[in-house]
Length: 228
Ligand code: SAM
Image (cartoon, rainbow, N blue to C red; front, side, top):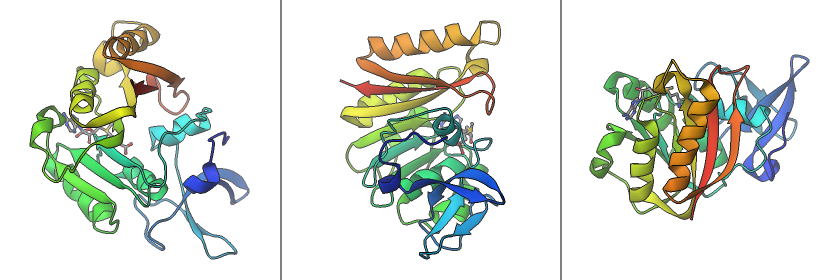
């Protein structure tokens, strides 16, 4: 279930919970839940949070065999489509010495992101803005190591690329969730993923990994690409 290299340093672990093996991250804010997930205290006093692959596509990708997760303890991450912060919170656990700029365009959703996540976590900076208006982000200081994009828009790859041109450092990674049904319902999902991958290649990215997320998310894939 867990093939991530350097998992221990990243605080990612498989823990037995109620007789079942569950993926977890080390909780940055002891005692605080984000989305009703179970908290598990270990003998050494460290607390873990169960990471639900049906709620977070990054957890699904890890369970589906992701080995090289480009998020490190001190990574700076620009997260597009933060929603109420489920995946953002686990990334905040992993990059506990770094920063997560969490962009969400829907004000009501962003309010929950702030209440549930940003209020408790010093490394999460909410940005209530449309990711198409990337020039208008307040609070962005310098470039980032990783852009994670999960906005389920037809032009999501173009939006991710525009953000990458503005904010991703050379050699940085783009983690793109391709929701094929948002792009074209009539086409075969794998051919849509191929088309999005080709766009990344023609914009100077090399493709490190494509992971299909079934059975956790139908017709979704995660593409991990590196900027030259
Ligand atoms: N990544 C989240 C998680 O794993 O917890 C789920 C993201 S949900 C599929 C997509 C989110 O992207 C929604 O909350 C939506 O409001 C937001 N969104 C859609 N278009 C956007 C845009 N252009 N800019 C910023 N956020 C956007």
